[in-house]
Length: 548
Image 1 (cartoon, rainbow, N blue to C red):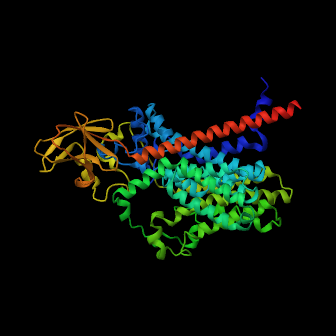
Image 2 (image 1 turned 120 degrees about the vertical axis):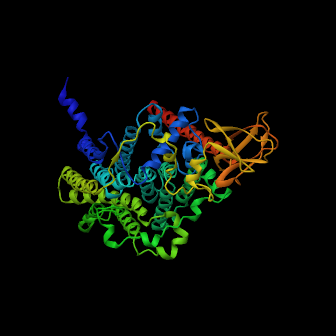
């Protein structure tokens, strides 16, 4: 065996594998334990994962209303919160892997994907591996990314962060390459939409700013704007199965999110806190990465792009402070909840700019690029370790039957997707009984995502233990459809018995849900065929040229 040969394969060009493994080791340090990392929202996301796993075990992997929540009463978590990547730990759980290990594997996978995404996109922008490595290291170990994973357990944000480099690469493509690869921006935006809705809003804002930066060029070349419009339409169609049913539900009844009162003005940061290596800050490291710009005199397109990323990154960062009028705009922007969420975009933008600036600086001074990469690894390691040490969330070991205890299935943070009149504690307490119109109780039996109950002949209606969402249906033993509504006490499904005896209640879905799913599937299939056809066409052309 030629060990020298295999050693070169492992090392790769410019030390990619060494840097990758070191970065992964640092970023994943807290995962090397049998207990589960803790975090502000971890129980809710573990509950989401467990609900998906239960659906997979029962042959119902794509439920929109997850019945594990609230002791079986259900919660439309999958309707309002994209599950795309959380199917990874859910499938592990369904295969028998423990809760702790499943979640840690999932976190590690997202960290790896984030590194590779940042590396690939920066490499395609700069055509330089070392610049791409620098960006990937900064991106992976930056303060906000580490905090999202280990302090906040913000699954939606740190999975969406995987796709932000693709959005940035897509912006480079339409600004400096006349939109040669609109599919890059399309994939990036699709990924963000299917991971986290709030991050989607920030990425849309990022794209709008980029269009404004290059408005003269776009106006001079209408084909660019046409490609961008086509890309936006395709993204909307592919993701229609998620956002259309969500909007339908939001318009069908009053949900608790309408009563959320986040004091954005109170949550804003002081300018000095932006640079702190602590909770809710961006950290000093991502800003230090762009300092070499002071010593660069080049006016190449790549530097212009880095400048734009820096300006937008700083702009996003400043908007977390009192420089932005949060007090005046709170009623319009309350859905953001916390101004410092903007650091997700700022961190990615500054990481890309930093990778470009640092490499350009060392190249212009004939400093070996490998030295710059290792210096960045060292600095970002110090930043990450400092963040680990300041994290006081600790660990907890979740048993396989942890969520069999009904009160634990009510851990839904603010419960913003509950009907406005629902009380979560009462939901769990009464999850096994239905109530008649005269207040008497009737026991119910559950099977998968439906329940059965024997109606009292004297009752006009039953309030059954399902949280109401548009799409619930009921039928009697002969298959006759019964009327249902959301008028039940405590946000429950109300079934009008109409003289029925045995009643089955289940989530049937809505016409719009079926239509939006069909649209998304059809567009995806057409895109796949288009790509295959184009690849075959190009191959045939190349073969013809070769024969000549």
